[in-house]
Image (cartoon, rainbow, N blue to C red):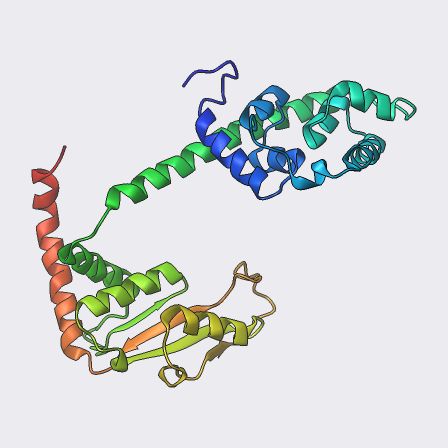
Length: 290
């Protein structure tokens, strides 16, 4: 859709995001920063008809706004920036802060650099909205899966991430390891499709010693819904101080190993099915090419 705002072509998507953030209680500045928007007219249009947060409706809302406006002005904000943050008129802002010093003008080179950065922020916001829309469309296109589709997906998933038998190292035991909870859930759904009894499953958390181990153990136990006795002792990896790790922080939960007991026959079926896919794939690609 072409609008008066040019690059903001995906207006409805941006409006949906802005309204959702407003209903979560974010300020105009918070919405602006989250969506990377600094065009006042666009922000006003995005929030048109959406009531402001409750705090602006209090009896002393004007006093609070005035105090906040003065605080922002002392931080060096312009009238436009304060308006985006607070959602009040420029005339009110001017009245509230007229006794305060004007923000120091930036050197031309710095202003040009700031303008360039804002343009990139705008472009990135549009690109991110397009990226998320593409992902949602692809997700919705999957729809319901048939048993055959899940079976084939599970075979491919296992052959990519599961342990494999080698002529020099016999491993006809189904063992799947991954740090992505969605991969674990798909693998478990696949095992359920194959009528693998839950009593044959054993789990093991594999994680670095510097992590919050009890928290990670609880997370994986809650995810798979297994009894404590189904979990083997957690495997702790010693931290090498010379290694710079990026998998740190509150979201780091290590990996989960899922092992299927007495699964030699299942492994052989997986391997046979995989090579069946390999043999059938080229012809399927040619026959179903759009």
